[in-house]
Image 1 (tube, one colour):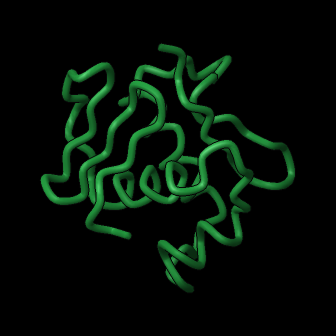
Image 2 (cartoon, one colour):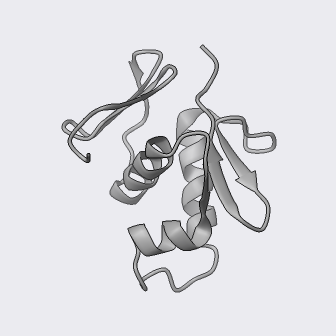
Length: 105
């Protein structure tokens, strides 16, 4: 459900208020696409979401550039405080897609 808050460890996403909190502290405001991307990843936490599925669910045929998803993932990692060189929250599964691992408590 799009209307129910999602909780993955200390990470909370509330679609009703468009807020994301880490350890109860609001993160930087997310643009709509990044919010939708995080919502998708949190709905399927611990599972790999393919780039094709992300593209289909968030952009349809609108993700023309091949790096669109990569750029949004990079920005989302930054906003969540995930290390861009050694990400722990949003992990890349090379050649497949991405997996959200609930951050440590």
